[in-house]
Length: 249
Image (cartoon, rainbow, N blue to C red; front, side):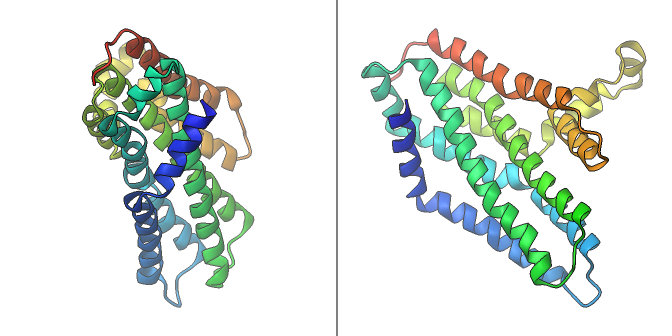
């Protein structure tokens, strides 16, 4: 499993399209700072602008990670070859999830360093609370991307086609699904009947945990519950579905 994972990571890290997407995201950040920076620009304004910018992390970085990890593998059939050599399907799926998490974490660390060092370099003098907000935003958006990716693996392994997963990931990462679900679950008759279920949506859970940490009220139970439901449960479903499928060559 580790050999498969490390080999695939080396392949992805040599892909120009993947490296280009990471570079493009960093360039977009630099352009954002260039556009908004002026003598009246404050640390508070910087945090607000960067927080909005980082909300695109799942849509840009997350989707490119998904395509690099899953789409290319199905295209070249290397996954089928690994299974043919005796690698269990469950380990394939777990390796893919770990690989995605590694890539997202690495990029998040790079972006975290960038967004935390930039205000200092610009002389904006951010306080501890503002730096903490930026760091937590990077972490939240990275986990949001990972959760959407995990959910999108279900159609991938059920259909053995990455296109369905890419579509699902784009809809999730663009917050299209979140907006629709919030509108549906926020209907007054539903709220009056079964309560406000929008608080249990993955994005809402992550942002709530971030807000609690900012307020000095850390609560690990909602965070762990969100990870179990939106990352580990979809992975288990994907494993069960993939085991029952005939391999397509």
